[in-house]
Image (cartoon, rainbow, N blue to C red; front, side, top):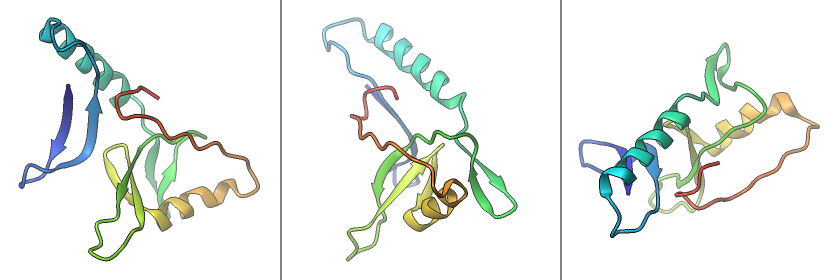
Length: 113
């Protein structure tokens, strides 16, 4: 089961949530689990507007990898807190942590991170 923000063209954008379940199970129970997951994830902010644009709130950022949308580009962008963040902007957001270590995990969209 999946829920997502949609643009006028009904294309997914912004937030996107998925949950896996038995297709023969009670779909209302599965929907309830999806809503619980959405509430948990929406309750946490990873970025905020600062004096110099978006800033990382704590030391953890969670999001989704997307294409930057360029016709001939293979570059990525990310979606954090439902906001599209270009790759170079993510790099700028990481600069206050210069010298720190990091761990990048790539997970299935249905998993909760």
